[in-house]
Length: 98
Image 1 (tube, rainbow, N blue to C red):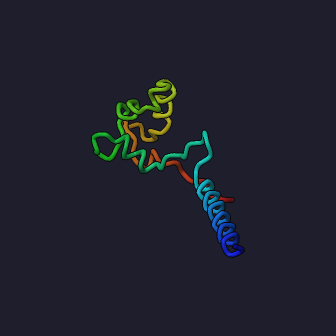
Image 2: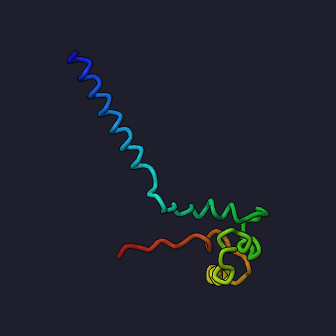
Image 3: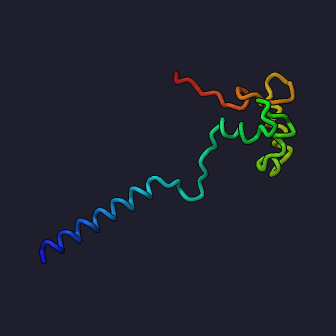
């Protein structure tokens, strides 16, 4: 009887630890994971030409939420003013530690 009780206690502990580990891997409710810039670039580049036109950018669901802000963001990201975004222009620059 003691062996059964010990086995059940170990199984319960293992199940609890496994459940806690699974919860730790889940993103917090309400928080969305930031999209990978490369994946986002591929999704927006509908014609696959290696750049994102303003039309492609403005067709995204995020841009449709606030078209004025999206147009402003596009203008700020288009550093060379050619009317399209390259991967380099889409990828945020990492700050260097001082």
